[in-house]
View (tube, rainbow, N blue to C red):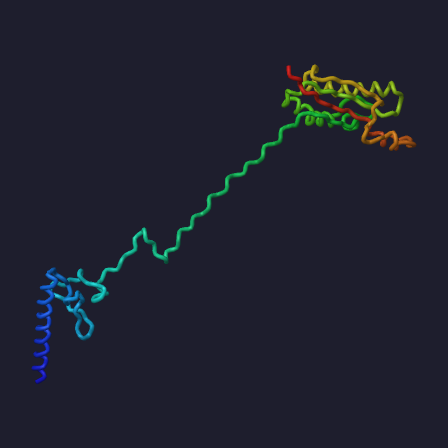
Length: 239
């Protein structure tokens, strides 16, 4: 009896497949991998399994019936996965910083030199320390700026001693500065040297009032601003 039921069930299934296969073959003449009803839906059994046709191959598998056989879409290089971190691009190195070029010497306008910077006391010979200062302040500038046509060199003295002596000392000091500059390559015709003795005290120091009543070394120290040499430039006039 049990064997008869099994035979009957198998017979029914064969009949069902044959029926739907005939019906679907009429509606969908193309070869399909699954049994399709008249509405275009895949036919399934009582367990929700899709009925395969005799044409079925793994290549015909669909997601609805055989999801394990469907080829998964492999992401291409144009579609990066979210798990892959974006490449880190290092910023370009900063441009090298070159050392600033030394500032060129400025043209002479007016330079004031204390007499003690250039000369020993009561002397008119330029000291080595004074020569170095003249090189930095005057010589370098005159060689760079040819538009400076003339240097006016003026010597000054304090009021200690006779007026004639101070006049002579101021002239000798101005000429000593000019002679040194000539040795350094500055043409003599581009310089004029003169002395004013004690007639032109330093206007900023106002020694006439500041040193009033002083004697000896205190007076010598107070009158120091009056003992000086100034160098002033005159630009070349256009012809």
